[in-house]
Length: 388
Image (cartoon, rainbow, N blue to C red; front, side):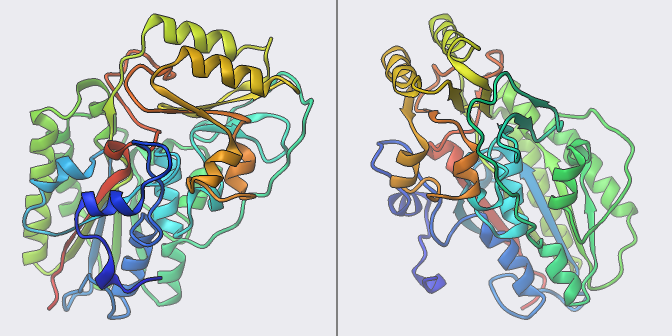
């Protein structure tokens, strides 16, 4: 790892070092990526890194789903703000798992929402745990690595971790338990609040009701993503982010250090009828042995033997806003590691969105994520240090 003093300080510099051979698509930066979240948290409890704890040694970490760097910059003006790159694919579970384990998505294996099950015969939805399959003509088994989390690492240092998972509590148990392993998850009443301003206000009230001992890490998930999918980055998103920044400043002044980060950004989505028709024709049982995988602006197919080349050429000719590729080519351009668990779980035909006319699973959403464009890839890490 290079010295931190040589890391890029602006999004433009970061993207310059994370570019690929495909114009407009970017890879995970070698150093300045979401793995830095876990490292920064662990380092601060050992007196190292950019985050400094106050005398109480309390730390609040807030994972804000969907708030890309551009829209966080003004809201976090009083923070030590640094751009990071997201993961492949830019989906919530892939990114948050990287932020707590320090492992790339290709390494931890939770790639997208739907991907090849560990048995190599079916696809699995990591949100619900539901499995599906049509034909097991090819079997490609994998093993999900058992990776320690930052909460496990802090536990070894005698630092307790308390998690407010909010919507993450609804994830399938295997995913949730791996992501939050080593932390105590607080039970919470269910909430359907999506408006960012009211969401931050409710969180502030929730936080004030907690009684936390000195030396405690509190990790929180806030879902801006659901609102942005429907409304984009409107004034409510910006006001909610500003309110979170103000809350972080107050907590810092009261002696609690704060770190906020985001998993991915979002970008406009507007698939046309012809695009959806072309995708539906390619993704059915006639051409594929399994249902399609991926999520949002990254999708892949598991074709019957001998059909991958034909499907890839067909889709490349029909979809102008998609880069049609393969797992091997993704490895060649540095998007994911060759031979990794993640690479083995994606399909033989892969589509990455390069524009808005892309066959997303839900065409009604106005903004989406999953691909590796600049708006999706560059995310903020903001620090408010209570110590000196």
